[in-house]
Amino acid sequence: GTAMKISTKGRYALRLMTDLAAYDQDGYVSLKDVAERQKISPKYLEQIAGMLAKAGLLHSGRGAQGGYRLAREPKAYTVGDVVSKVTCAEKYVLEGNGKKVALLDLGAKNNIAKSLNRRGCEVTVYPAHTPAEEIISSNPDGIMLSNGPGDPADCTSIIEEIRKLYNTDIPIFAICLGHQLMALATGATTHKLKYGHRGGNHPVKDLQTGRVYISSQNHGYVVDDFLQDRK
Image (cartoon, one colour):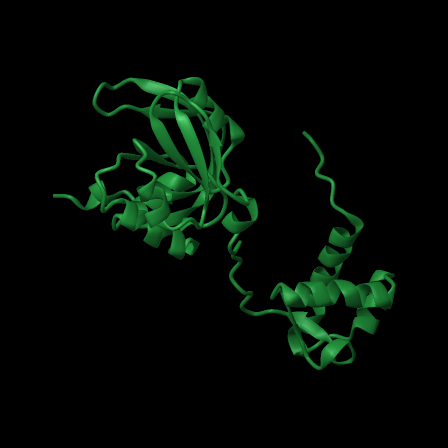
């Protein structure tokens, strides 16, 4: 097998949490005591403890002098607004003589716009938080919602704009995060998979033809299956 490399800070964090798990039953544990047992610099240990406390994994009694214990109910992890960090800064156009496509960049791979453009489409790429009215006013032949990172349910303002796009007759197609936002904008729900779909060998069955396709997938969230509730 392949050994996983862990940084020095990561190893010390594991040693700190293991020590606290063994000694914090009666209350807060002094970092000085942990440092002596684990042979780690107290100053360095304070930095690691502060980092873990900020992440919600440790609870501080009265700062470093008062000691720490493991958090009994760690804060739920959220990735936050990551779409804003990966979308384009401003609108740009890939000229073409064919259909006009408005591509909403939620973290789009460059090849998506290029592939549409190679097929003759004029592709206008819009930042993720572009108002729906601006996209609609350009009279595109179709709107594409791109791939992107993060929890789709966190993209509340973008979902509202997509809902406005649906009030038009402009065709909308989507991939990955865009597909999930399309579903949320039209009343569906999503959830985080226990194990994300990662890799280039995922079978997908066409229920109408029975044919199975081998697909490449990389996502951690999925649209809930509304069909299971139908009678």
